[in-house]
Image (cartoon, rainbow over all chains, first blue to last red; front, side, top):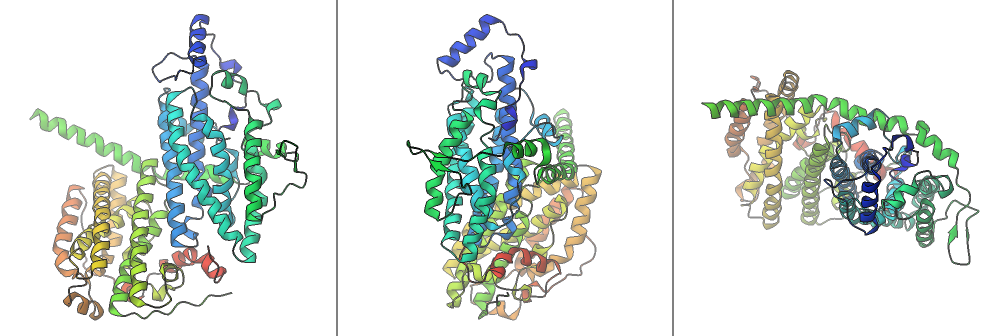
Length: 330
Length: 258
């Protein structure tokens, strides 16, 4: 999902915890208690959450770019206002999540620097380009739809600040998802060109969206501890299946075809997808997606070109403080 | 595949309303260009917020212009199906974002004016304009506060920020005179108590600008030469590029519903 790079081993980093303290911590988790910033917690728990929350924050911020690409070209003033407000919401989510990550002891600056240096990951989905207006509808409908599937369970995550952030984020995401679906509905009821635009967008985004849920369970190295700590409550495959089952009827309602000729429905009613191209996923995660370089370059440019502004603000604040001290001393 | 520009019956009230709507739309569009690229996340949100305020003002004003005109036009036709020569905004608001200092100086010069203007328009005998003004003034009051804090920070910040802010003031100053100009079309509305006479607002505007600029350790240019033309559709070269982007979908797919 927005935190795919967690699917790597961090066994080396794991400190040997005092067994009694670890057991006490696990007992709190098992009793469904919320862990708060000043509580004692295993170093690995802190590290896992810092990575997960900051990757989620990076995803929100980088995720502003593909949609921001259409703000100046939105086709009506109503759509323009809605899109600008939506991308602004993503920025707000990013800020909120960085603040949640900071409660674990790493500053926003450090977290952002790691992302800009290419050391921290963000969701693979934002490394695909938005080529037409239908991509904006599709992102709202499918990308935000997938994000909600993943984030609703996170509202019950064991770490308090993250869980609370997710409650607010999910409310806004579900609004975005409906907005995206409504864009698609308008296109699908529109001209032949608009319908073709909608189908083309679905064709390009469908598989990358399924990959958002992360590698198949049998290949995921990370889920065990996250599940034990109640950070993660459903497996990648479970969430992916939930998403597909919810989405197929929506596509049918729109009159669009899911670009998966091998997809079939089983007896229980689940829609089973054909094989997912995990090589593509690995390539995108390792930096070879269509937009990886553009996205990082855009974030670095904003960061670098904003440096003098941040320095000016800091310099002015320092001057003001000195003047206030001087006045007080008089 | 071209889409024809709309025809507009520019009665004085339609023209007056479109001028204010165009100011808000074009400046809102400029601010929206920052989205995802601002110097800090907090500022990214603030710029989007102000862009949304302006977009909202534009939509209300376009809706009113359409109602007054009483033809087939609506907010989207006004925004998407007029070309450069039909746009009526101030030259100031179409100037490119440039660096953050330029955006803030543009914002500051306009917001201080707009706030005074909306406040005066709240007294308009036209109830719709008075209501739009009352809502817009709440927004512009915040835009003023936000911009003037930045002007002071940038002017009195570092050597580099001072230099950039001063350059922006020097470059944009000649676009400020147009805000206070009045033509015959507006004169009649002013006399009727519908439109705002901007001339009496100028001393207060200049006082606020001067106070802030002084506190920011910046200066105002000596030259009083002022550019004009936006109100009658004689724009800078920048507006055409902005419109070609803004209007691309409506122009490419004629008659489609979005």
